[in-house]
Image (cartoon, rainbow, N blue to C red; front, side):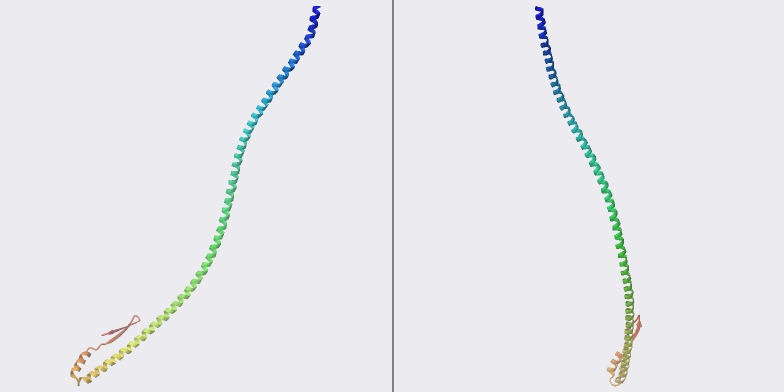
Length: 208
């Protein structure tokens, strides 16, 4: 009888124990699963955060590097373009300026040559006219000097005639007025003699 009771109790208790163990195992498994899930989720979040941080850092570094590279490349391209444009513009300006200066120089040379020809022609005309005027003046001066010379000869002849008249008058009056005649003789003892010369196209008169 006791054996049957023990057997019955054992048979009744064993399933309960087994169910309790299974339940505990299930609960423990669920708890472990939940904890694992929580840890995995936490680890995932941490990994995600780390990856995000590293990704952001890497992205920022790449952006900075790319920006620096792009900026340097843009600056290089702009510098090359500026140099090329500057060289082309300077060459074009130099060519245009050289061409324009050559045209202006040619135009000025032509104008100056024409003006020089006009001036030379005028100078030749002025020189010819001046020589003609000089010759006319020399001829007139010679004529005037010759006229003065002729007039001086006429005046000298008149003076000589006057001297002769005075001498004759002295001879006549000497007999009538001896004192006055002596005085007149003294005055007329050395009558002035007029002479003339024609030297260097000028009339020179000498009274002795």
